[in-house]
Amino acid sequence: GATYGEDACRWLRLEGYRTASVGKNGSHVECGGVDFVCNAGHLSAEDDDSADDTRAFAAFMRETHFHLSIDPTPFPLEVQFPYRMVSKANEWMAAKSEQPFFLWLSFPEPHNPYQVPEPYHALFPPESLPPTLSSANDLATKGFKFEWCRESFEAAFPDFAETLPRARANYLGMLRLLDDQVRRFVEYLESQGLRENTILIFVSDHGDFVGEYGLMRKGPELPDSLCRIPFSVAGPGIAPSAQAHPAHISLADLYPTLCEAIGAEIPAGVQGRSLWPLLTGREYPAGEFASA
Image 1 (tube, rainbow, N blue to C red):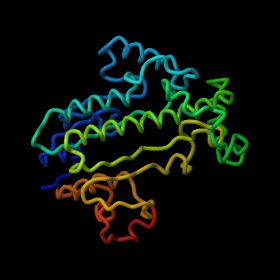
Image 2 (tube, helix red, strand yellow):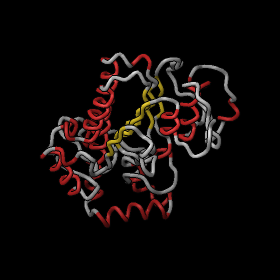
Image 3 (cartoon, rainbow, N blue to C red):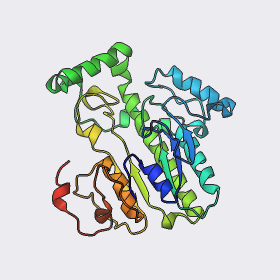
Image 4 (tube, helix red, strand yellow):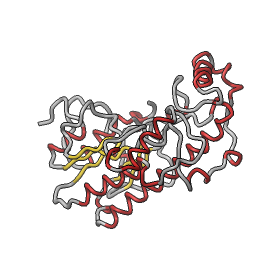
């Protein structure tokens, strides 16, 4: 029967799924209950020592002081973590198995250090970016926490204000790089005949200021730019929609949703509510999803 203490990876493994965690962990103290693991963080990855260029890339990332590279990253796309993690995921999936699979493919990007190689560095010139909805002039209105965050950046990086447009441009370049690697992964699923029978969930953990209030990264309080994250689902049984769903949902809802999707019991003590009725176009208790 369902018991306390099992996370989604371990529970799905008990249900007969082979499991993998590729990329930024962020969800487990340790991955002892996962069949295949390849971790990557924001500055390094487990396979950094696999080649000269990946070792050099790790050294380059440390030299960014976890902030920014003004110039294009002097390494090819193939050493970027999203590319390497998709390669690892595809290699794992290439081992044909009759077992169904659960893959946690977690990209460190988009995130500081804000760095991208060409052609992504040149895709969004700083002078072409749309204006933000707020600026550093609004910091006093937002209060001490926001002001302190800006002052901390300026203390660490005296050219922070001057280089902010380049940081924004690099962030958008990282988004495009990530889009291309997600496409590469989905195309691999299609090439292996797995796409039609796979549920794809695309989600983030948080946003980034990307210049709002004259800030980057995250930090003070819970503004929309940090809390309203992408969440999209595609796959068998999922009802397509051209517009965003009105329900207020949480990352905690993913676990019970996966359980219901595969017909498994939801373990006792799991927080969150299954989104499967919402995703499949069936009736659901709208009142329970009227607010966060």
